Image 1 (tube, helix red, strand yellow):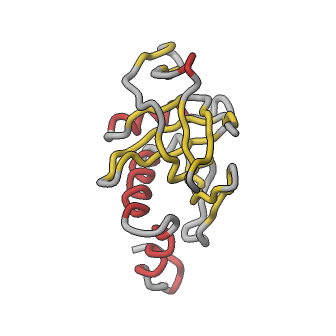
Image 2 (image 1 turned 180 degrees about the vertical axis):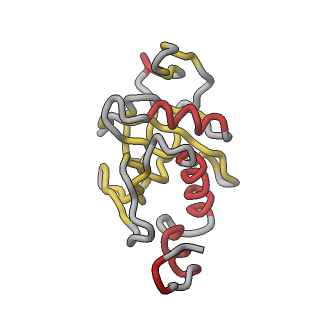
Image 3 (image 1 turned 30 degrees about the vertical axis):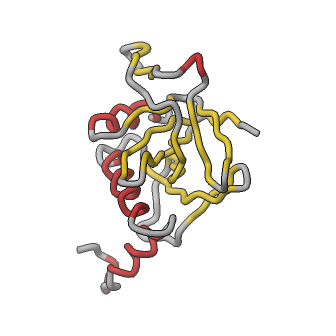
Length: 163
């Protein structure tokens, strides 16, 4: 079964293939703006604004509806035609919001498949780079390990200030 998510999908190439980040949020939340910044740092477009999502072999995948494939709406510029991947595996699910400094790992289940999820402020300048680092960390071990590894490497400090 395929469901349509109000989301964009970008992918980053890793040694074992393309790893996708599903960027979910309502219209006007900054999804396409984040996609443009992600493309500038090496991500590839898969889908903008609407993503068809399905499960296969215990993994979650996504692609653009045919009518939207290779297209991205940039407010103020109109519809851009860009090279795009036909589909990719979704390795990270991101929603717009302000994250905790170091919270417990979070997961979302879609089509019976658990995927790590993050809150990220889409319009924050460093958001695309944070997604890139999250995917690199996911490639180093089990899904969700990036948060556990991060928490394990940072000793607590009095006052709660970061280094």
